Image 1 (cartoon, rainbow, N blue to C red):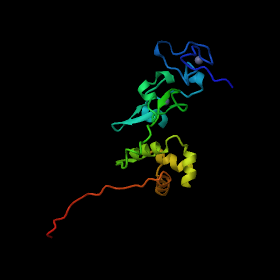
Image 2 (cartoon, protein in one colour):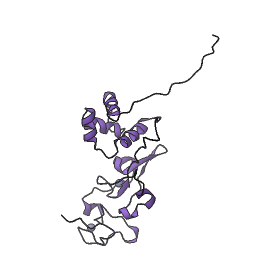
Image 3 (spheres, rainbow, N blue to C red):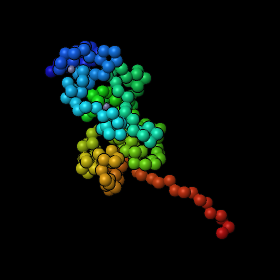
Image 4 (tube, rainbow, N blue to C red):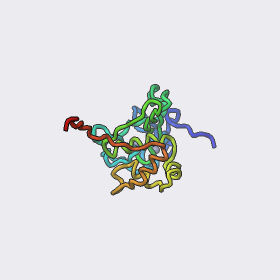
Length: 187
Ligand SMILES: [Zn+2]
Ligand SMILES: [Zn+2]
């Protein structure tokens, strides 16, 4: 099958033939003029309610991820960075988003995590381009257990046993920074 022509080469909606992206307007999945033409649900206006793939946490608040209508709109410095990846937001806004940058294991040996979001971010980065299913198989857990760890707040509780299996599959170990109160040597 021949590759489909996407915006900006494509100028008309694949479904209804209306003009695409005029005046900086949104384009959905690179092909459509509206969520409806793209077969997507109406967009959330509150980032906290949008699917995880469409939002990012900044200063403790959910914000929408930056939306790109085509690969050509992604800044060169990001596209040139081999640790950067991008994906179509097929579950919500129909745009391209920048994915998590991969961790450079030659430079980073230890990472502090303060809350479930930090842990989720770390797990997603460690997963890189592997699918949840692939990682779950190596770890010997069900993919849903990994999803719960990567998407804090979606499950009532997470499976700690699964966490350690996943960390082991990534050949990483967890640590805790202890309060370091030195006792006086004389007592
Ligand atoms: Zn349309
Ligand atoms: Zn999105």
